[in-house]
Length: 286
Image (cartoon, rainbow, N blue to C red):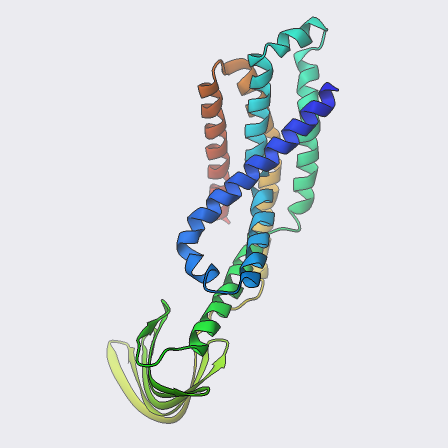
């Protein structure tokens, strides 16, 4: 009975905390990508949310475990259940193994997912959303209004179907003024009858053209980057292996050190911050 109760509570609390941390991180990211998420159809945004929560819930499993184990052990102390267990000749080592069972399951699950889930999947979904968002914006450029997408500034005097007339466009150090243009999708424009001004090597260069193609997403590709996945696989393994030492930290820290709820909160916060600092150090070293 006690074994099943601990298994349920540790598993439930671990996933609850991991989901909460994933949600908090999403709220921080909303300030950066909210204009994209809310500027696209719900179906596009939902797929991104699913990818986000699947990956980051896995990523925060060790942090959830730290909170679940520390709070679980302290709850036994606070309700004086430890003394009851000791009176039935259940040693601290036995209690340690009872908590180790759900932690072992989490460790095995994380070990498997370490070779399946990567932050690159989230980046891939984000880049896909950005491409969709830019397509939606460029396909509906308003007339006689300056449009600034953060990387491209455009002004269109008139529109007729898919043809843009008397268009001005700025991208990086390129300035284009053309009589006609057509947006071909994927960030690619075809300009006709115009002039192009560029700034290179501290000099301006002006040229006229009959036709000119410009790709505004030349470095933005909705493809998985294998080099990034290789690095993230290493970080995932470190993240999984960290479950073992941080289990020891949270269990014995709550058992031997914590005497108040405040001390438990400090222990959990310190453990999570230390864990994330280790992962950050691994990330920048790769």
